[in-house]
Image 1: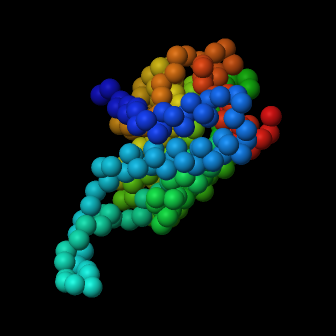
Image 2: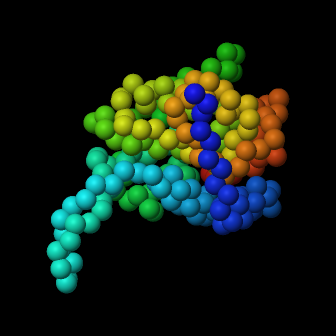
Image 3: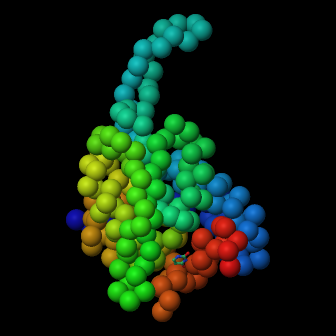
Length: 210
Ligand code: URA
């Protein structure tokens, strides 16, 4: 099965992404834009969440009304830059449960090694949205989704700002059942595994650590 990829072409997403890519954009500007763009990505990602119905009473009449089905959605942030997307998504999913997965790249083997994992209880039956601004080599995303699959959620989606053909290919070789939502697919990875043209190091730009 070929993995599904959704490029969110909404003009507001594309406009904000351009501002984020610019090296002239400040840390505070980058942070604000990431929060705003993540809210918009979240809106698209939630488009097919299942609904059920409940009985309520409006001030005028009883009615049967739609409501998100099942347990609370879980947003899982890949440390550290995933936090920027998480903040924006929480604006539209304020009751979401939150998980964190920390991974570092072993400098010799380039394999992603987990150093932190805290997920909500009762993952089975939840819809999981995994967030990381950059799907570059795909290694961290693969390791994170491996881990999340062990907990048996009802569905998993992966959300990033930017990706590239190499990252998508590698990710979907391992997880063809996990759709990727992104604002753009860039040209390629360079020899330092940065996405080109990209936006630089998302964590450094978000936290001002360069
Ligand atoms: N991580 C980043 O922050 N930027 C890239 O271009 C690739 C990975």
